[in-house]
Image 1 (spheres, helix red, strand yellow):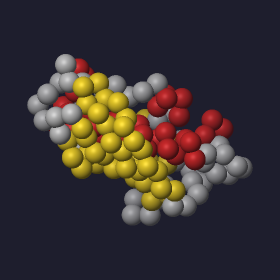
Image 2 (spheres, rainbow, N blue to C red):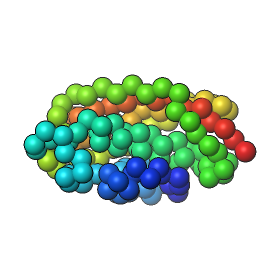
Image 3 (cartoon, rainbow, N blue to C red):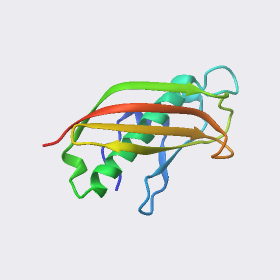
Length: 133
């Protein structure tokens, strides 16, 4: 179950492509709203997709541990994005992996790709503060 995606996900046109018990894979279509230079994605749109993928993976992990992810509030502590190649004019997918889920802090990695998952266009490492109610 994916909950609490930020409103920015709707602006980017992000949709959930696959979920079936695993952390979700998100897809962002290429559109005028995400264009940087002609024919390429804007770096901010790629970064936004990575952040949304990380948030979806974190909520998925919070729900999987038996808690109610809907009641947890998460706040980003830091974000590092590595751009590996230009995003072209095609759909872009992203997925997050929670590498550590503590009581108050979570570490999440997210990767964005276009044609082949093993050839990412960008990757991010994020740390989140978790406030559980």
